[in-house]
Amino acid sequence: MRDVLVVGDVNLDVLVRPERPIEHGTDVAAEIRQRPGGAGANVAVGLGRLGQSVTLAGCIGASGSAAVTDLISGAGVQLALRQVSGTRTGAIVAIIGPDGERSMASDRGSNLALVEADLPMELIAAHRHLHVSGYTLLDPRTRPAALIAVGRALRLGRTVSVDPASVGPLRRYGTALFLADIEGIDLLLPNSDEALTLSGLADVEGAASALADRFRVVAVTCGASGALWADQTGVHRRPAVARPDDVVDTTGAGDAFTAGFLAAWLTDPAPISCLDAGQQAASQAVTRWGAQ
Image 1 (cartoon, rainbow, N blue to C red):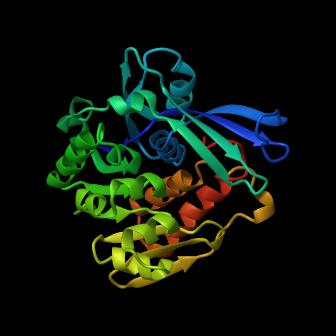
Image 2 (tube, helix red, strand yellow):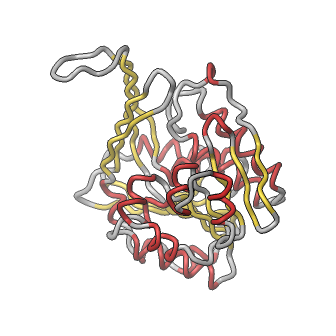
Image 3 (tube, helix red, strand yellow):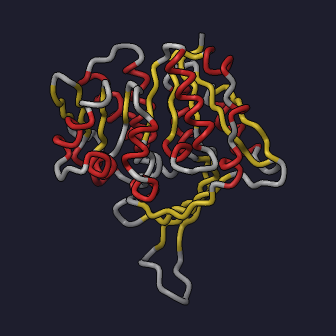
């Protein structure tokens, strides 16, 4: 049996670092690079590099996808990706600020073609853990397939984790519906904004504790403030590892944390070791361009 099945997006990231703030109606010099990305692919690659046997399930465009898939498979990830004719592989443009934080515009492209047949029972049964990116749940076109996958994994007795993905789509989708969708999962991995939104509370520790009343473990990333673990026994907090001066690009930092955390959690679910493993993976991700 393989370790982890990841269900989520596969994208091409276009990373833009302007020399000065972008000005309306004129040019600004910038450093621009292309990197493979996508929340699902980022987590899968991170897990593969940490020695986990991992499979990535999703959809890609029928042409021009080799540059993306070659890097993913090169990290030891087994691919269960369906090529969708007449579509583009997903793409994201990230504008990176001086502090490494980014604003993004996304075109999910072929990722929106995911259907139940892409996630058959035998694929889920072949893995001991299922991880689902929230983007897949937050869109009505892919939600049915994601819900079926979660339901199948739970019926099989597999552990399941979900990353809420992004606070904007989460708010538009509705927190009550999202929480109902993921009822019964083992591990929720929000960032601080997502935890506050899902709980309706104003402080992160309170939000994590409230969410831990619904889920076995809640692990919240808090950027430069570190990360915390909440369960029925209480809250554990760990500081960030990366120094602000080391931050080049925060793209994919949350996905890196998820990969590091999951790799530790599947081996020995101790709060401090899991948080430290996630923080270490995130600290490495922010010192380079791109999520992978």
